[in-house]
Amino acid sequence: MIDDYHYTCQNLFFKRYFEKLKMSDIEQLFEKAQKDIKTLTEKPGDDDMLSLYSLFKQATDGDVTGDRPGFFDFVGGAKFDAREKLKGMSSEEAMQKYIDTVTGLMG
Image 1 (cartoon, one colour):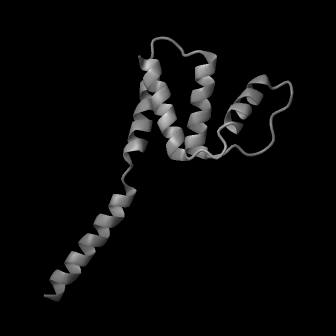
Image 2 (image 1 turned 90 degrees about the vertical axis):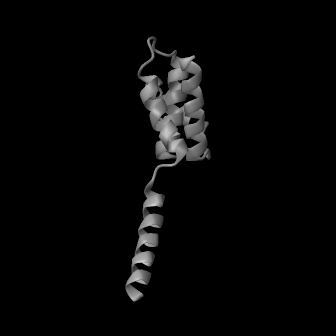
């Protein structure tokens, strides 16, 4: 009787532990979108690339930190500014917007 109780408790513990480790649906779709974007036959425009970059970084790294790159680093400045606009956006929201952008580009 005691062994059955311990076995049941142990199974519940491991079930709950591994459920927490599973990726959420949004994370799975986010990973799929990252793979899908690589299958496009044409490279997206600069604005779309900048949007994808900033959404990806917001989803994976969170809010931008540090100082804006110097005046002559045009690309770095544009990336920083794009990320700055997303400050405060949750990781899940950034993932969803990334997915939506990729879906729109896929046609």
